[in-house]
Length: 428
Image (cartoon, rainbow, N blue to C red):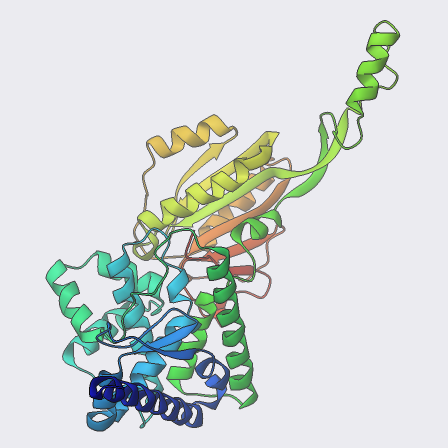
């Protein structure tokens, strides 16, 4: 073995030992994360300038690891925790069709904010002016620091400002994150594994008792953002009703036997087709959109497109279905009635958001209650309210199923006990 080979081998072995020590230190400081911190294996990669992860391995650059261990061990601990939190928060698997570089910056900010809020002496660092400014922007608006919301924040910034923020929050390399918009089966399984680790961490943290630490609360909110216990498709099915629709039921009707009778017995079928079947489709439905400044723009349109796509798949509309699309901020701005799939296409041809004020949910419920009194609905399946969650909720429970759909993590305590609440996946 040459000197270069033996030197490189020693560096890799020593750097890996450093990583084990770093991991053990973090487990001591954050025992509720022990399962997540111990999950990935270590692998050397000298092509890297810093560490990286793909969810299965933590890749490290031996020389960098040893240099940090000697010069700045506190940063080395932060760096390892940074990569683990990316996995716990599902950042690797949630990009979808977002810009890859900008999504990476948003994820770095979300992770670094959580670490900064933990305020642990083992990896605490003073906040730079840029960090203070970014955090203040979110605190002043009351928005959460989930990656999807941060991404929208970055989209509105000047490119030079984004580059400055990127330099400030950069830590690990995202080179091994999935490049495809549609996840492979292996990537989906890996994401599920980390979601399980997140649930495990939450259980352990709660077993320790009420924790007033802001960092732990921030982490809980991030983990909620990463969850997808059920798809939006499954959620929407809860608002469908079973009723009898006049149509042939293919499960009950034997077409072969019916045709045989027509051929052999001169147009006399052996059986009559069943003229009705039980089916689940939307009857009457209300979609309300919070058009306050914080939920305006592309997220609203994306949500509506996804919702109407699910409603029209596999003939989800009844023949006499009626959907009210209501836009509202502190008052009802518009109410468009849709009763056919053709009207959905026309809607998006000229769709405009109306509003931009503060949020008060009560006017929408008053409006829907009045429509019910006037006999507008034959059978109201429910009301979906798309919002960021910051508004005045009604105190009285309505006589129809209601769900608040949140575009970002929200405070569950403020949601009325009678309402269903659901955090929309980032893909919606």
